[in-house]
Amino acid sequence: MSTPLNLSRVFKLLVVVLFFQSVHSQLQVGFYTTSCTLAETIVKDEVQKAFFRDPGVTAGLVRMHFHDCFVRGCDASVLIDSTSSNTAEKDSPANNPSLRGFEVIDKAKARLEAACRGVISCADIVAFAARDSIVLTRGLGYDVPAGRRDSRSSKASDIPGNYLSRHSMSTTSLNFSQTRVSHKKKWLLSLVRAHTIGRSHCTSFSNRLYNFNATTNQDPSLDPAYAAQLKQQCPQGNTNANLVVPMDPASPIVTDASYYAGILKNRGLFTSDQTLLTNPATANQVKHNARIPLLWKKKFSAAMVKMGQLEVLMGNAGEIRANCRAINS
Ligand code: HEM
Ligand SMILES: *[C@@H]1O[C@H](CO)[C@@H](O)[C@H](O)[C@H]1NC(C)=O
Ligand SMILES: *[C@@H]1O[C@H](CO)[C@@H](O)[C@H](O)[C@H]1NC(C)=O
Image (cartoon, rainbow, N blue to C red; front, top):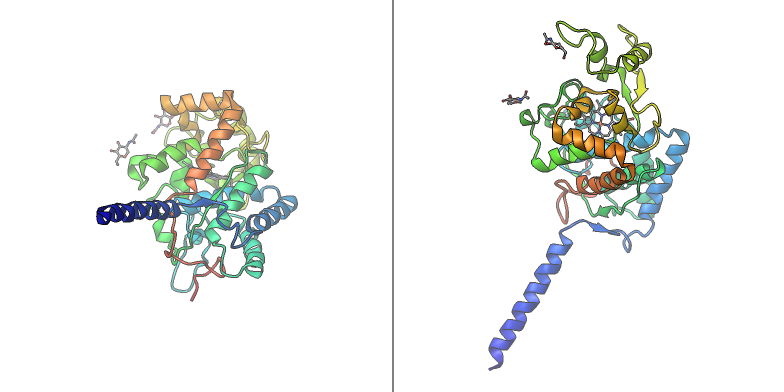
C-alpha cells in the first residue's frame, strides 16, 4: 500500500526539484547578494565617477551593452582585445573607433576582483553599468537580472552581414530581411533605440549631407535647417575622423523622449531613425513615445531588461574572466 504513495511522493519531489532547477536557469535579480554583497554598489560607484569626469561616457556604456547583446548574446565578447591571431568584435568598424567606456568596466572589474575574486562576470558588469548610466541620465531605474557568464571568444567576423555594421546601420533604412536578426531582436530594435543620449561621429551620417544619391546631394527627408547646422559641425572633406555631434542636441545627457519629438520634426540624425516614420506601425510608436514621455521611459527600461537576457551564458557555460579584455588562459 505504501509503495505507490512513496512513488508519488518521489515524483512530486522530482517535480519540485526540476521546477527550482528551471528557476535557477534564469538570470536572477540580486544574483550576487550573498556571494559579493557590494557588487552592484561598486559598479555604480565607478560609473558615477566616470559620469562626473565625462557625462557622455554613460551613452557609451548603454551602447556597449547593446553591441554586446546583439552579437552572440550578452557575454562580454565586445570587451575582448584583439590579438596577433584574432581580430575581436571591438575592432570591427561597428565598434572601433566609436565605442567608448571600456576603461570604466576595467576599473570596476579591478575593484570587484579585489573584493570578490573570480565571482562577478564582465557581462554582468556591462549590464549593471548600462542601467546605472540610464539612472544617471535621468531615465527610470530597473533591477538587473544577473548571473551571466563570459564568452571564451570574440570575432569581428561575427559582425559583418549583421545590422551592427556601422555604415549600413546609419545610412540605409535597415532592410531587416537581409540581416541575421531574430524576431525578438527586431522588436527590441524598434523599441529601444537609446539615441536620446550621446554622440555620433560625422562619418556615420555625412552621406546625408553631401552625397546622398546620384541625383540629390542632401537627403530631402532631413530638415534643411538642421542639415545646415550639421554641415557647419561636419564640414565636407574634413579629414578629422574624430569629429562628433550630439544625437539629441536639446538634451544630450538626458534619457528622455525628445529624440522621438526630433524624428517628428525630421531631425533624426540617421536614416535608420528617420525611416521609423515610413512604416505606419513604427510611426505610431514614434508619435506615441513623443506624446507620452513617461510611458516611453517605462517601455525603454523594460526593453533594456529584455535585451539584457538575449542568448546569455549561464551555469557552467563560459567562464568568469579575470580580466575583461582577455579570456582566461
Ligand atoms: C537599428 C538600430 C540602431 C542603429 C542603426 C544605430 C546606429 C547608431 C550609430 C550609427 C551611432 C553613432 C556611432 C558613432 O558614430 O559614434 C549610434 C550611437 C548610439 N547608439 Fe545606436 N543604433 C541602433 C540601436 C541602438 C540601440 C538598441 C541602443 C541602446 C539600447 C543604441 C544606443 C546608442 C547610444 C547610447 C549611442 C551613443 C554612443 C556614444 O555617445 O558613445 N542604439 N547608434
Ligand atoms: C530586403 O531584402 C530582401 C532580401 O534581399 C529583398 O527581397 C527585399 O525586397 C528588400 N526590401 C526592401 C524594402 O528593400
Ligand atoms: C535620390 O533621392 C531622392 C529623394 O529620396 C529620390 O527622389 C530620387 O529618386 C533618388 N535618386 C536616385 C537616383 O536614387
